[in-house]
Image (cartoon, rainbow, N blue to C red; front, side, top):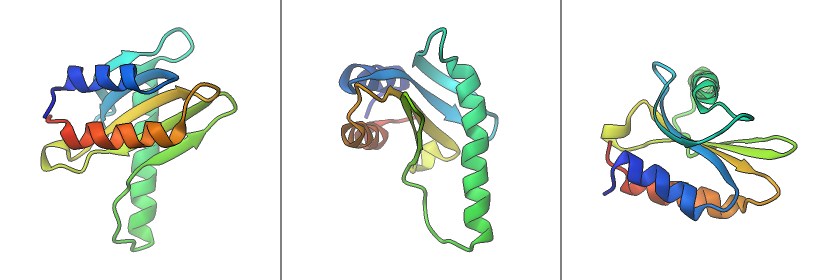
Length: 124
């Protein structure tokens, strides 16, 4: 079990090519914690914007009567990967981890694996 700040630091340190990481409440669009980002990536804006992505996917799944859970959502840009992983624990309901990666430096499979590991250990 790890705290929020520890979990975010673990992702930053262990995932090659990480630009920034945040824990986001998709009901409010607010980042509850974030590390990284910079002039080219405002994590607060990214948190709010990706809340709409999660909500849209949940709506689409409902309309399609899909009785499934989102494991993760991948957005591939020309120079970045953006990974969104909703938390599945009872204490994490309504929250997601958001990870922005430099596409040239990141190993996508390892990033997904590490997000899953951190999500399992994270206590919110």
